[in-house]
Amino acid sequence: MIEVKDLSFSYGSQEVLKNISLSLKEGNIYGLLGENGVGKTTLLTLLCGLKKPQGGTIETDGRKPYSRQPSLLQEQFYLPEEVSPVHERADAFGKEAGALWPNFDLEKYLYILSEFEVESKKRMDQMSAGQLKKTWIAFALACGVRHYFMDEPTNGLDIPSKMQFRKAIMKYTSEESTVVISTHQVRDLEELIDPIIILDKKSVLVNASLERIGSLLYFDYGKEVHPKALYTEQTPSGMVQVYPNADGRESKVNLEALFNAVHMNKEAVKSLFD
Amino acid sequence: MTNEIFSFKRFHTYFKYDATQMWRNHMKAALGIGLFGLFAYLVYVIISLITGSGWSGPGDDIISRFVMFMVAFTILELYQTRTYGYLTERKRGSAWLMVPASTFEKWLSMLIMTLIVIPLAFMLVFFAADALVALLDPTVEQSMLGFLFGVLKDFSTTLQEYNEFYEVNWSLWMLLPTFVLLGLCCNFLFFLLCGLIFRKYKILGGFLILLGLSLLLTLVSTQTDSLSFSISGGVTPETVDRLTSFLRSFNCVVAIIVAGLAGGIFWRLKTLKH
Image 1 (cartoon, each protein chain N blue to C red):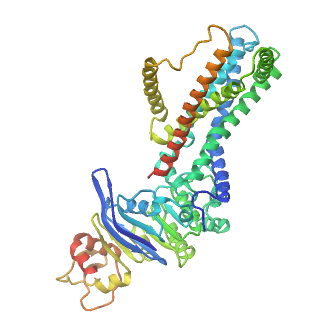
Image 2: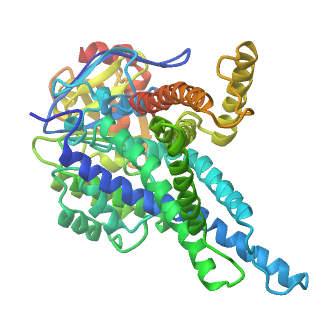
Image 3: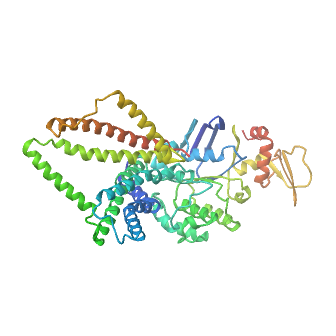
């Protein structure tokens, strides 16, 4: 369980996060969405302990991430958007670096690499950006940790790799895992992420499961414009509208439409979810 | 319960990983610096051949070979800004911070690498290359190690002769190597810390700090002559006592600086953020 209370962070005079509070429960794959510059990466780096909160607290299973205690570091993995090109072969890297995580499974690592169609004998600094990313994803999943923080993990992956990524996340993270994925590529991860967190500079606009989102907002794919629509978009196949779900109808949540609806009606949506 | 500061098992695993990374990323460069003497020798011979002087090695010019050693050793000291300098880079630095070991374990491993492993590897290569040259080139009279053993033998004889007249001040003979070792530790740790503090221009930053410190020390030394001594009157028990007292004070000061630098490195690692 990760508890964030009144978290604030600034870069000099530029305030990025202010009084952010949220709870991240195990067994979930959270999708962290937000406009550019609202602090998604900053929040992830604060959650894993790469930065120190300037206000408020973060507790992961009762421990402060910034203290970087080995017992906590052994239970978490941070995958940045741009990963490091290590000067060694992928298999050797797994063998050497994997020894640092007690639950690391070398066989699983090599197996995921083969599923990702990455040559384990290839030097990582000679791999393409996508192959390197997949190697790090395979390594992260083989570490068998409880908390994953992934920043734009599908950036740089080709279409089959994105599908392999979704499958790997579902297959190799346990029921006790908490996965937080920051992304702009909502379509890539639509079938994977639930709950959804939509972050704004000053607050968390939405932190809810798809079920709850569906119970509060209706996603209308019809052709008639609704008078209370928070967001309307013309699509090649028709129209998608988002409006308050007054009569409890069921609909399929469209993450892009949700994000845009929230972005254009911050206060209204926030009060709806509070 | 997990010891969050030090565990032998964790330290052993981390040290092995650190040593492998060091070998892959830097030891080859450090060994290249170790072959500096051999390169200088080859350049010397090639120039002799080109200028028509025929095959000509350094002969009995041991001083120039020790100068080469000092030059190579200085390059090695400056190179300490690079061995762990990558920690200030976001990609590689983040990955290092997330490695499951305590800051103390990472710091200890770093000190062992910097103060023991790297200098020993360098000296082994430098003196082995020098011995090889002395063995294969008949114009080279003796190896540097052979010369050093000769000096030590002469020193021992002088010491025995001195002992016939005066009571040997053994502490002096302990203080001298301590003086040299502490000085070396001070230089290595200083440039290591510069590598961890400055994100760019690490060596230049180090030199600027040294320049500032030199100016400060010059200013202080012109205000006091308490540390000065003269042996112009020959080596007498009084001058030996003064020298012992001077070295004791000096070593204490340098030991405090070494401890301060080691503490500074620990503090930097503890507070490093990405």
